[in-house]
Amino acid sequence: MARWSYPRPPSSEITPHAAWLSRRHFMAAASSAALAAPFGHAGPAMAAALHTLPGPYQAAETPTPLEDVTHYNNFYEFGMGKSDPSTYGGAFRPRPWTLSVEGLVERPRVWDIDRLMAEMPLEERLYRMRCVEAWSMVIPWDGFALAALLKQAQPLGSARYVAFESVLRPGEMPGQRNHLDALPWPYVEGLRLDEAMHPLTFLAVGLYGQTLPNQNGAPVRLVVPWKYGFKGIKSVTRIRLVEQMPTTTWNRMAPSEYGFFANVNPDVDHPRWSQATERVIGAGGFFGGGRKRTQMFNGYGEQVAGLYGQMNLRTHF
Image (cartoon, rainbow, N blue to C red):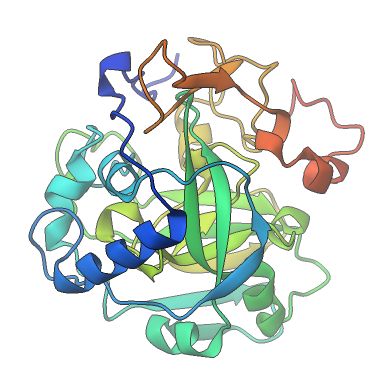
C-alpha cells in the first residue's frame, strides 16, 4: 500500500476566469507590475525581466492568467495546500545558485545560473501543463532546450538516463521539515536520455517574461509537456547522466499510482480517479466550460509518440 499520494483537489478550488483582453497587452502589464513587486507574498526575490524570442512550440489555447499560475501550485517542499508555495516561499533564496551536469559525460560542468542564462538564447514556449490530479493550465515558459545544455557536457555512449535532483533546504522550505517529512528529500526525478534530448523538453528559468517566482520552481525547473506535471522537478541543482533507470520520488513512494514514464494518457486512470478529463484552471466553473477531455500525450503525440514505439503504455505508465 502506498505511504503517500497526491491529494485530490475539490472543485471549489477552481479560480474564476479573469478578464482577458490581449495576451501581449496582459504580459506587458504583468511585466511592469512584476518589476515593482515580488510574486506572491513578501520575500527577498524580485522578478526580473527576461529578454526572450518566440520559441517554436506555441499551444493554441489561451494562457492561464498569471495570478493562477503563481498561486495554484504543487510544490510540497513548501506545503500541501495549493496556496502554500506562494504563502511560504518568500523565505527561499534562489540566488546565488549553481546547476551541475555530471556522471556519464565527457565534460562535467557546473554553471552559475545567471551566467548560464546569459549564455543561453532564451525563448518563450507556450505549453499545456497537465497535472496528475486531473487539472491543467497553459503556461508561457521562458528558457532553453535541455538538449542544448546536455550537448555541452557531451554525454558518453554508456549514458541511458538522466537523473535530476532538487534542492535540500529545510531551513527555507517548511515542507521538508514538517508534515511532509515522510517524503524522501531531496525530490528526485528522471527521464530516458532520448526523452531528455527531445526538442520539447525544456529548462524553464522564467514565465510570462519574468524570472521564475519561488513558488514555480525558481531559479530553474524542468518542463516536459507531454508528461504529468510531477515530472517537472523544481529548483534543480544537479543533473546526472547514468546507465540505469534512476529512482524518482513519487514512483518510489507509490509505484502503482505514479509510473516512471508518467505520460499523459486519458485511457489509463489513476487508481483513485479518472484521467479522461481535466479541470482547466482559470477557465470558469466546474460545469461551465472549466472541464475538457484530456488528450493523449497532452496533445503532443505527433511529436513524441515515436519515442515509445511498441511499448505497452498501460504497463509502462
